[in-house]
Image: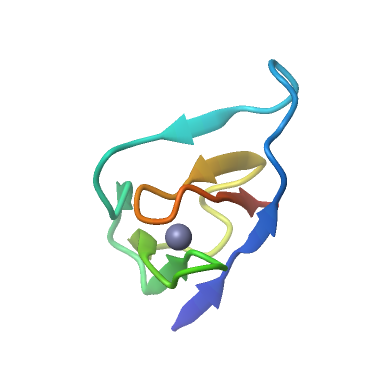
Length: 70
Ligand SMILES: [Zn+2]
């Protein structure tokens, strides 16, 4: 299964935990859910468990937008 993440504007410095990486996927797990960038569709988290990643913002290495894991 696949979940499209929500794009948010650049978070204010220090207001959120922001994960930046030059490669995707940024997270890899043993679950069955892929989380994809809400803008370009790059896989940011591959095969993770739903709900495993919470309350962080991930900077998409492909398009540079910020995706929210709510
Ligand atoms: Zn993207």
